[in-house]
Length: 279
Image 1 (cartoon, rainbow, N blue to C red):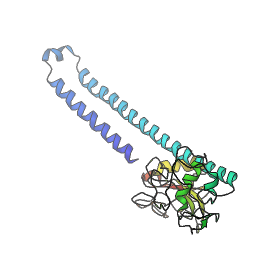
Image 2: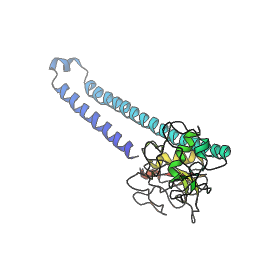
Image 3: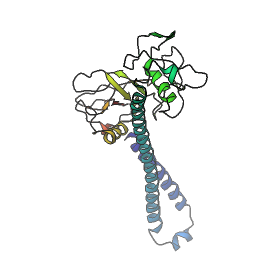
Image 4: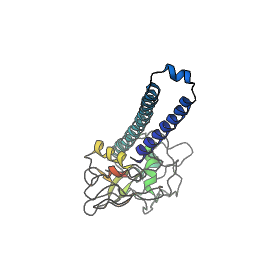
């Protein structure tokens, strides 16, 4: 919404400047020109032509913004649906969780020159997993990073993600980003909104910095349009964003993306929101 107001204001300024320049030009024309031109025609054309131009400018800008927004909604939905399918496909094939899989060294085709790191096999994807040693190989502590290497090495995700032993921070080498350059997160925790007390469960987070109108549309198309219930929820996960999305409140305050009842605060145009698909 803020963008729309900015573009509208810019369009008005451009046409105002054009009117002033054209009016100055008309004043500089000869008396002979004005004597041959019907009274009022020049002023009429000055006004109507610039109005038409303003509509064309604003229409083109707004249409461009709509296309960009639609593209980002599709991108976020494709990420959520694609990774969800990859997650369940991995479980079906290996009878283990990606990132938590202790048999990766024997069965996965990891990138050339990269060791197939393993998880501890306790059935959950943890950010601070308790390491174990299998055949002399220690499992990783941050299984939420390892999940991307396992999924891509198994062929369930396009691209190549690789993680070095002991890594704890997301990077372009080990994690995918959302359209707003924030890393996605898949793990076992309760960083999603629930009307009561959220329980720990596996969930896939979009990452923060998603505008409220975009995340609301993702929720509407993936689920029920209510961020407090269903399979897609509001999330305050920050990741590498400078500020975490705010915790919902009953009434709007600056920074609020959603009410506690699950209504997205679209009219206020907040830009730092996030969501999570429950797995």
